Length: 204
Image 1 (spheres, rainbow, N blue to C red):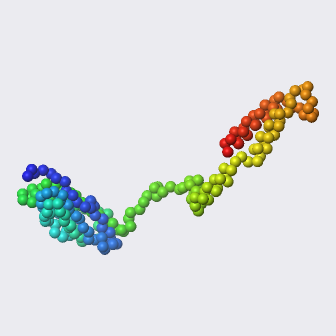
Image 2 (image 1 turned 90 degrees about the vertical axis):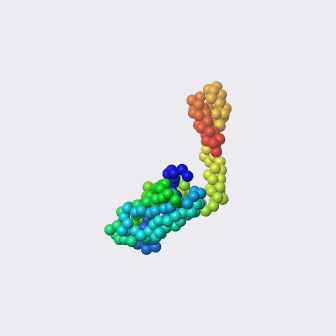
Image 3 (image 1 turned 180 degrees about the horizontal axis):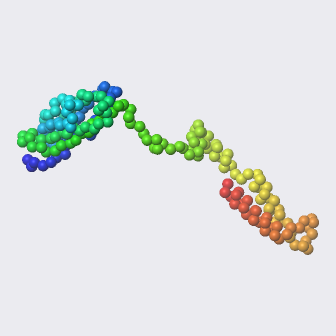
């Protein structure tokens, strides 16, 4: 067997103990051995007085796992927010040579409800979005849209009709049809207004 560093598979990667929640004072670390040969393990800690590990050393069969229990012995306010570390060390079963290790960080917090979403993650909805949300169902949205898009209003049609009638009136000084005359400049203005109203009608 070639002796080389191999990965150490540990879950979870960190432990969080809660000062107010006694059930969190005892937690489990799972050690995985995905290889086809058995390994040994040893558990070390940066502060052994604060923790107790049930079976801090042992062996793991090939393609197996082992659960170890970690207990916090000093859940006091003075130790809150202090980070400690466990080191899980793996060894070859026969030679006991170290083949890898994994660190698991631990911390004691004052409350189990210490995870809060940052306020900046929430943004106010735009007014157009809130209007859509105010409808009860899809049929009401369709009815509102059909009312707003029913066609050009009556005033636009009247303006178009007046412009057309004005353009049909004679502009020659020699013509005396019904005593109605209209200047050329006024006809240009009516043509412009007619063009704008036509565009408005076509957009609807």
